[in-house]
Image 1: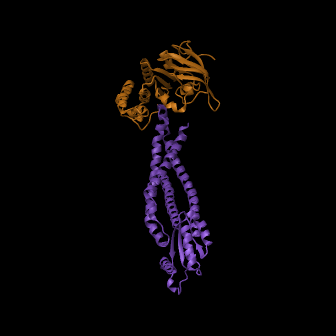
Image 2: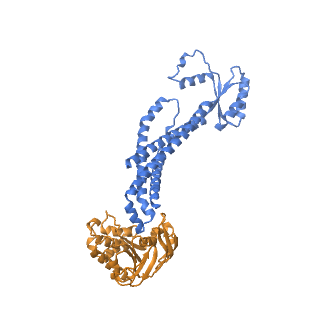
Image 3: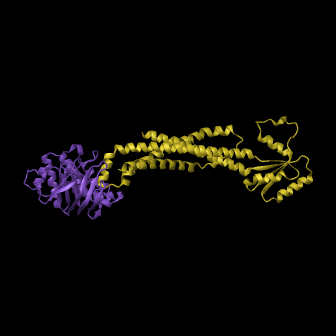
Length: 236
Length: 271
């Protein structure tokens, strides 16, 4: 589903965000991308939704060569992905319903479709009762759920999450991660970049660890730190 | 901010409209004069009837000549009186200073100088006159006005475009968060551009509307005054196609507005 081969990303200011990264993610997987801030987790996700092209390497997402994608094809790519951010990125002057519908409107979906899919997405995240409220009337967890609903409304095959629980308290965090898990169980490939150790250790899913732009470890049923048991720190 | 943009476009288009109006009128005037240009072939006072008849034959034989009219001196004086009525008091003339003349018209105004030169050489011809200098001066004036006018108009169009562009950029910047989210969700650049382009279009056309209103008002008040001041110039008001002019102004206003907005948004979307 997602494939990176020899991918490097060099920012104009000289920072090497990713260094010869190769990674394969199969359809339906749930993958955590972990590492300290600045190790390249967000950069990697950004490459997947083509916020920037890689400096070198090949990236394939759902059969599309993303690294070679011309700028005018990027919107089409993004319609097949769902992306969720730490700061939710909701439109403040639109209601929950309108925010979710927005993702369908910009793709030119017919109103009938919108009326069908938006309630489904809101139902999935458990926000049907809040559909008329505005983002500033919602809790952090509810805002993130709105963002997730929006990410899912076009039925994407892949959901990318960049620190989705970064702005949430532990209770909301658990809620959101459980939601992501449910979504994954329905068949969506989910990639979550996070530095929330507790969440990662609780879930025991595939954990890909980045350090200094390289993949340090890649383990199924992994821990935040390499499987030396919970709470132990890797030296070096 | 929008009012400034609309105002600038209005002023620019007013100038453009006035300029086009004047240019068309002048061009028409010039052409009209050229068409009517008559070569006055004054007969030598000492010419014999035989020579005059020979002249008539030469005129008939010349394929370049379209029509010939003989104006005896008495009629010439009457015409002069009519044309200068109120300006010159011809009753002061004790005797008729005018000679007989042939009024010659040619098919192609461009041949006038050549024909005149040929006619001058014929026997019995005293003088050959055609309004050369007046017409040429008029046309040259028109050309100068045209060049200067175009330069000014171009300048103003650029200024109007810049102002609309800046207005749009501010609007785009104010909505950059929303635009960013639109891009993340998969909106095409065209989808994002559209509202701004429409806004630019509207601003441009409102400017056109203002310009049209002002121009029509100006024409209603100024035109009659001008006709009073220049009675001997045969302006043909009907020659200016007003609906077409209005359409052109709206077109220009719309295009400036839309393209300025297009570029303004485009620069933001390059990121």
